[in-house]
Length: 400
Image (cartoon, rainbow, N blue to C red; front, side):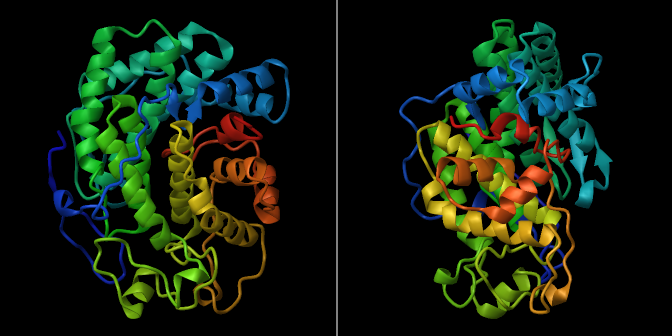
């Protein structure tokens, strides 16, 4: 059961300093379509077994960019076999993780578990599997709650990485005890899912998208069809409110359930931007870093759904390709026109283009010259230290 919680969430909106939200009343679009698979595929969160096998073969053959990406990952502190997890019962995260009581520790340990799971599968060295298990067991034995204003976002960040790690270990390694698996399952169901599954309609879009990234991954691990369907439904409603296409009309859609409807309200919500072009994001004029979080989450959700037999890419392809292309163009140094964000952009898109680029360009054959240039320039893509990690390794040129 999803239990409701009351949180004071500090909204990032320019139109309000703080908006108290009750996550239980933030319902996704009215009718939640039934789209969950009859049987879930495992491992099936962001990376499939076929994708992992492709990566392992490339690394073992010394092929680039995969070998370089793997070496980068293994050299990271996240892959350290001497890592000591730092679990705590209550993780308290305020705005921009201030206060930071366990926030960085939780995110880093979740990323480390995923890193170790990848290292195990690619190398066959069981020490990495055991380290992933140690980290997951440590947190599942202790964590009980997330508090303060950034609780939903923090839960989304860490909750995106945990099921990626757990799926690989549970379905490719025999050494995780039934007790450990069951306790980790309970942790995801009782501590993480209730905090994120009902979305966050009035915050900046990267919040809700990240929360759905975690929700769909957790749903796959839990084999929870209702949670999967709710995550996909919320995602489908949020993407058009995050990335604009001229076919939407004169101005972007407001997020479902937000009450942001008029042009003036939308302009406020879009950081004061009042000229709209294909690929513009609700957070473009905030900064590229947060926009990158949203774009990464969109690709992650679509990738997980595709592995589960539901291809969402065709319905988001135009938005995602335009968004990646527009932001890549300016990240690469194109002069900023006066009509865009007052002629000034805060760059820093991050290592977030590999999954979307592989899906749209390599699998679907869409030309994406700016995105390709940026993606190849940034290889090997590392981690954003939140919920994105090693995507050159897992998704560069991956046909599966």
